[in-house]
Length: 241
Image (tube, rainbow, N blue to C red; front, side, top):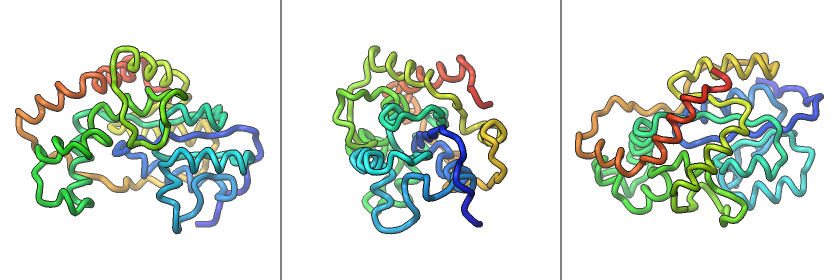
């Protein structure tokens, strides 16, 4: 597919890709409708993976290329302020479903976890702290006072952090949900004037795989902040679905 023409407006777009929410699919929509020369991260190649989640790479690029109009990646929401984005998009997912999807993803892609069952993966200290427990609220609760190194930063989630996350979410123009992904694409492409609309979902894990009642109960206990945050997002209404 040929690259989109350069943008004519002054808008700066930031897509916060929360892991295992259909973000990979939506990133393809962005790529189909924006010009690579104005987009971060760069094209596939050496170093792109690090560009997609390391804050130091994002900040260095912004300082060197302030003309960049589109940013996306596994970044905390505070990154939208750092790059002065006025159009902010994200997708959220029901927390237990997101965690199961993430565990299946890591079981498939991380050799260390291949032979573990889901309960073992969930209780793996590295995987759980970085990618599973209260991950969505964490990505919206980070502030400039945190190290801000990557999505693997670990912070304590308490009532004040939850409040920060909710306030940060309110700054987003477009908030969608994985379970209503098609509506999110419909509204964002229409309102942003995008004409190309890839529809295929990518990297989809089969979350119909059952988890034990005990594991489900443990996930619910451990992720109360994430569940509260997600329910808050639902109750305030998705801005793009």
